[in-house]
Each structure stands twice: as C-alpha cells, then as structure tokens.
Length: 145
Image (cartoon, rainbow, N blue to C red; front, top):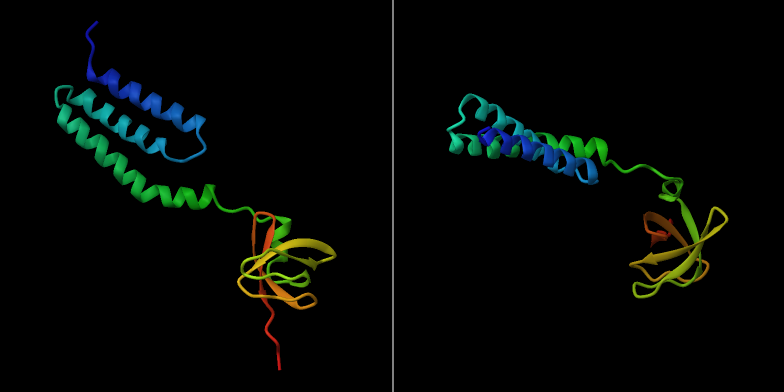
C-alpha cells in the first residue's frame, strides 16, 4: 500500500482532537478543523501539497479568529460564588490597612483579610470593590456631608 498525504492529514486531525480532549484550553480544535479541511483537499487533489497547506493555514486561522472569542465567552465565563455577594457591601476595619500593609475587616459577621490603596484606620468603614484570592480589595468609604 502506498503512503499518501491523506494519512498525514488524518493523523494530524486525530492528534489535534486528542490534544484538545486532554487539555483544558480551547486551542487544538482549530488545528483539527484545518487538518480535516486539508484532508478533504488531499482527497480531491493529492498532488497539490502547497494548496493543502494553504487550506490548512487559512481554515485554521479563520476558524480561530471568528469562533474562539465566542466559545471562550460561553465556556470559560466566570461562575459567581457566594463571596461575590460581598462586592459593594461595607466592612468595618479592625486592623489598619495601608497601601503597603494588609489589614483585617469585619463584614457580615466574618473577619476578612483586606488590601487597599488607601490608608484606613481601625473603626473606619470601607467599601468592598473586588475579591482577589482570599483578600477583599477595599476603598475608604466616602464621608457623605
């Protein structure tokens, strides 16, 4: 049996599909699609290797460019957690925080490690703006007149 380029494209497509299945990133699938497109071209024109490469590169690039952002948005979107409900709430500082030091605050009856770009003294209130790991990122609460 004669070795043909068809087997190369089929092997690459299978390789990329397996790579996609065992990784958590959405990346190899685009190369699998390009390989299948080149495989189809190789079935019709087995001697046109340059055309097959052009189809592989073009199909891979186009599918990557047009569909990846949509899939990433749908599949890898951030799942809200119970901690997300703290964002926008108020905490009371129980250990001073500065831009260079970590402090502690109490919110909803729980103690939290806090970080801030402001210096916030013990007893002052702060607004929770986001969560990074196990720390609340806070800003000094504006004094309303």
